[in-house]
Length: 320
Image: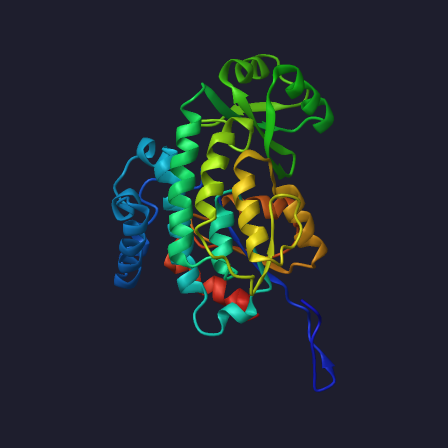
């Protein structure tokens, strides 16, 4: 990410980062444009076998309720990211990427982009993660709500009173909170002044203490994988730091299931690194939107369909 000099002329420093979205970014039929191309359909079919799910059907014909199911949504989102990566990292394009980061389950996609996990290991891990988190969510009536605006310290104090936890610090004045449904209802009925509380359609309190049973299962499964040290810079959701060890990153993937997603710190690290452009993998849109508020002024490309790949390659090649 250093400025390069060639022939005595300094070139403009370009720091293009690829990011992978998390759960909630999927919509019915969003993979239809991708599987129109045989290579992507074949790839999705292979990933379906590893996930033990029909991802072709879930990405094209399944309804919103079906793909909202944690056990379906997470493998579907990671598979979509892997399809995008295979198209984006063609030839020399990978060498033009300065680094990668993922939001929540998107960290598994990012691990593959950085070379830490193979596609097979990534899909195996997300298969186990999604099932374990769905099982943990079934143990108690819990959920999540997005809180927009207001004073962060006042909100955190109110959460402690109600026994709720912050799950995602997304930046731009948005914090996702999680816990018991009755406590979330109290927060909505008596919100912190200046805030707006929006209930989310999810199955449980992800990234909180309620997910501890899933952590134990994932720790055992992760011990069967052999991660490789990253070949691209990769930032973690834990605290926005760069991780240089593949095994350390895998440990973080296990632990993040029950710890908050600090996307605000990830974006702060990207800003500190001097990011000049951002490409979001499918199913794209959410992180590009957050970047427009938190990383003001940089070009972003949300790769929703194969038609968006041209703009992404233009950004990588310096044409955007």
